[in-house]
Every structure is written in structure tokens, then in C-alpha cells.
Image (tube, rainbow, N blue to C red; front, top):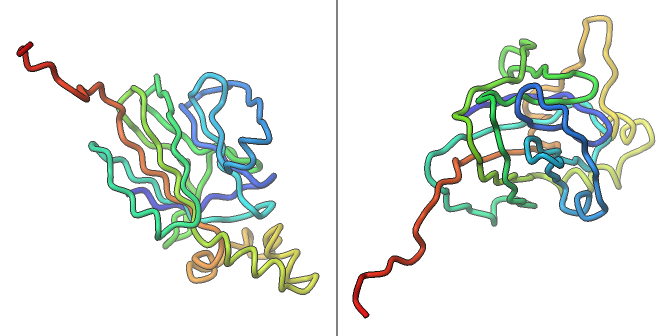
Amino acid sequence: MIDWIVEFSHSQFALRDAGDVSDWDLTDADLSNAAAVNEDCTGISIFSPRYGRFARLAINIVNTRPLLETEKWDHVVELHLLTLSGEMEISTIPAGDMVYDPVSHERKRGVFAVEPGIYQLHILFANLASINRQLSAASDSDYHELFYGRPDDENGVALPDIKTLDNYDCYRIVMCPLRDRVLKRFSGNS
């Protein structure tokens, strides 16, 4: 499992085939679904209820379709993604393809290898109700920090600790290669 902290703004971050520059033509349905696929199916955008800063992201790459326990998640979206390069990358504004290790806080490229092909993705969202309650109940200064994120300080990037991040909206992407399968086989008997 890949476990990262992503830095994002404009209420979204993306996962895409490395080097992909496809256009996004977002619809109201995409925003309502909280996830969208670009026009070439080589990238997905995930939308947060917050404007930005940091969120936990876990990515699981599995070989067989998982049974999802959807009751543990607030929102679940299924999409398909094509990778031609065999390399996937996180893409965010302002961080580009940079992510943070959740333990060491080391900044690194958010890139990982996969077999080229078509993948079924389950995007799982957690803590949406919690973050909405926190935003509704927050004072002006707390709201600003929750919605936009804490500004950097003299020590550099103001990464929240893991306990704080776990109270924010969190995301998991489960990627499974899409394989041809026979759904019903003719037995040869008439």
C-alpha cells in the first residue's frame, strides 16, 4: 500500500498517467460525484469539501476485484483509468507531483509504477461528515485554517500531524487491472 500526504488546492487533486496533459471538461455531475475522469480516460480528479492544503491518501494496487466494505466509507466512486506509460503520478496545484511521507514528512515525487493497461478504480472517501461538522461549527479563524489549511511558518511547510490529518477528509484509491472475463460460458449442449 502507498501511503502519502497530498498537498492540494482548488478543492481537488488528480491521479494520472505520467506526462498526461489531457483536458478536463468538468460537469455538475462530476462535482456531485466528487470524482471525474478526463477526456482521454488517462487521469482522474478527486474533489475535496475543503479548498485545500493537506489530506491523507492511500493507494492499494490489487490483482483481483476486491469486495468493498462500503459501510466504512462516506462516499465511494467507481471509475476506469487507462495508463499507457506504466507510471502513475499525483498531480496537484501548487505541489505538482510532490507528496509527503506521513511518518518522516519527507517531500518526494508522488509517482509509482503499474503495468500498462486499463484499471478499475474505487475511490473511497472518509470523514466527510466530520469535516463538514467541523467547518459548520468553526469560528472564523478556525474555519479559515480548516478550509484553506494552515499557512507555512518560519520552519517551512506547516504539515499537520497524523492525528489531525486523520480527522480531515481522507482518501483511498483501490486500483485493479481490468481483465476480460467470461460471465457465462456456453457448455456445448443444445
